[in-house]
Length: 214
Ligand code: CDP
Image 1 (cartoon, helix red, strand yellow):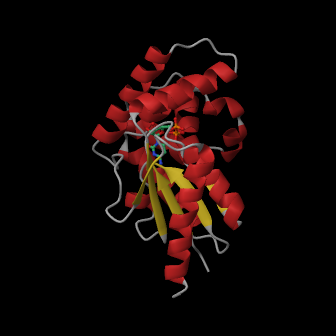
Image 2: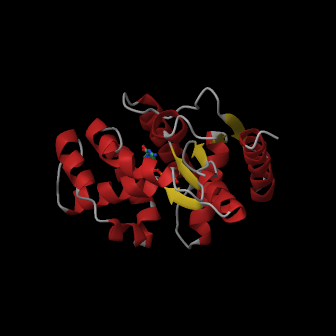
């Protein structure tokens, strides 16, 4: 029987790490939906297309070759910026909906992370978690992550990027970033990864018990 865990939240709140660990822990499949938007942004910019043209971006989304999702550089800052620009367009989001829903309903269970999983893609998900942290904490984490990779970036620049991305993601008309009314809120500002993962497990366990009628 299917069981969907929907994880949403702003950039660098820790949702990717939590989602991956939950998937491994429960033996569920995992989909990082941000990668889909990143890939569309990358392809469109490589082709020199107008990222503000929703109809054109929709056709790029419909023709997306899944092989590109394995490209590790998609997780970088530039692709994140391009992603949030193409993600504002309704035709782009519509082109990705069926794929994400199909993934979510896999018989073995699935974890999806993104911005609109609990609100638009899987409003019927058995477990919903909205992962947040203060912008300062998120910028600090992202800066440390980049320093660990040997990148010379400063905290203020990253904080500006985080705030700009938050504004774009929460302010857009189509599928804005927000917590579903029935999502459990998980603020990781004061938690390390292990504590955040344990808190997420408690939320999923409670949903599993509810589903199993225990
Ligand atoms: O890990 P991080 O939060 O930096 O990035 P991501 O989850 O890969 O998302 C990159 C961008 O894609 C976000 O800023 C959103 O604009 C967009 N996105 C979205 O609109 N809907 C999703 N389900 C996932 C990502």
